Length: 195
Image (cartoon, rainbow, N blue to C red; front, side, top):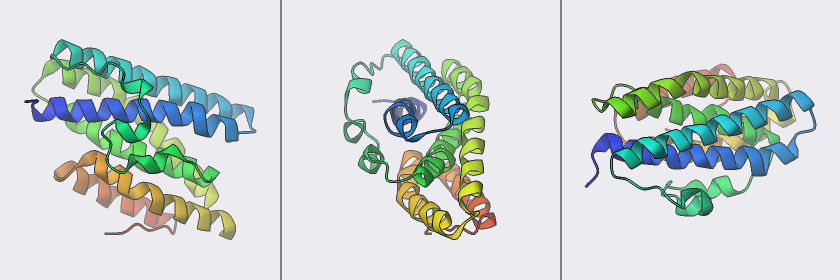
């Protein structure tokens, strides 16, 4: 049976691979701005690097994630993640980075405190990149909230992504801390999520 940090890192790896997929397959084709296309490429590459690094650490701990990136998102062990297989708006790209990657950031911060040194090192090294992804997503949400029609799209996107973000964290203190901080950040933009 896997220990809790190993289970958490396995879930993180699946989520990081899913982020890379979404950047490459869903978000990049939507973008018309060259700078934003570059951001999308960089974030996708960083997320795939996080997956590869996490998979290497897990392999050293006796867990093989072989074939995970070839599976559909709905078959990667991420509860409710089938909603991520479709993208309905640019606002959803913003919500994805702010919320789903925000949950991954909370997970990394927890893993960085692990007693398992390889897990703690891997997680600690990924935090700065994930912070940039989340900040970019929040910036995109802020922009979307600048007009009534795009703010409504942003609210719909937040409602759609929120349950998947929470599911990545499971139960416990990291989920509660993430939920509280995210509610505050979204509230400042005039957006809300369910309890």
